[in-house]
Length: 252
Image 1: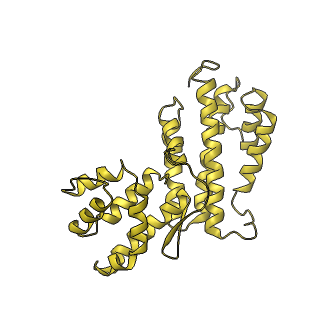
Image 2: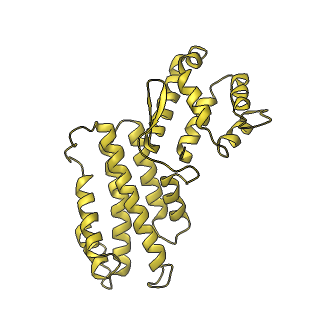
Image 3: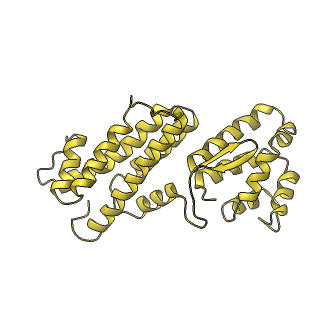
């Protein structure tokens, strides 16, 4: 399973409300940590091991664990958060089992974590702003605010494109619209015409008020649109690192 750090943290929060003995036995059962002494050990284990089998058991015996916790709403809140995080990562809980929504490759870093890593290692001037927008998009999704989820994802992409456009614009026109900024990247050979067209179509697709395609739930559509935006953010940041940090433009 390719889980983001967000999902792993959510799992830690869920496990933290269990009795310590329950948690230790669960981790020992799957050899995730050989000497579980306290919750700090458990948290460290969560971030460094394959948790697929443990998660499968948690899902299968969810009601058993819930019955042992009072008040019940504490479990329900943490479980809902964990379930939403899993869904963002491409895993759906259905009929007491976990189903992969799309193909994944074991050992590959979760995509959103790759994007965050690329941002952190870049000289991009607004990387903290973009990271915050990505997190706000995820939080909105978990709160079932799907319009806000897509809005924050769209603004992440727009922020990246407009910031780079301003940097390569000799007139330094900071008031460029999304369309003008995207066009600027193309005229300056930062992206191709096909890439410009694709980005423009994606931007329109995830804009507020877009029609949800037949067969999609609102939740599925928000996840799909958000992932598309994140993939384009990743693509543009990679190109930025190649062209700006690679020497084609001055850093900013």
